[in-house]
Length: 88
Image 1 (tube, rainbow, N blue to C red):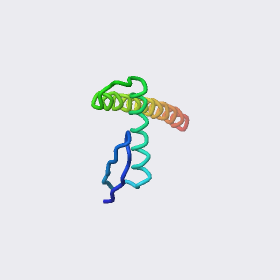
Image 2: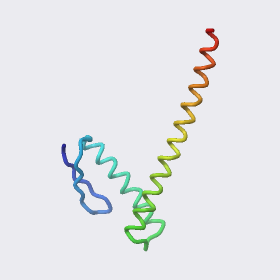
Image 3: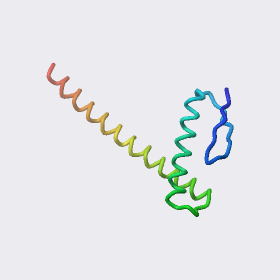
Image 4: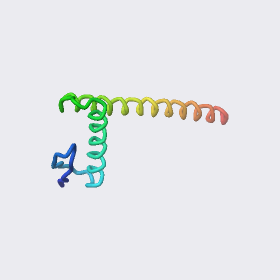
């Protein structure tokens, strides 16, 4: 298990894990960007509230992508079923 140093909002964090260093840096950069977006929108927000809002924004993206993925999977299953019925 390796460790990677990253910066989020100017603070250094050491992240330990099995993921490649570049992946961890990409994740940290994404979180940093989301937090900066919150701070730009609400400059006087506390760090805890900014973190919660950023987490909610990231969760929203995740849920929307999961929903889209489920929709695509259903569509593929329907098409595959239609094609399979042509061979019966």
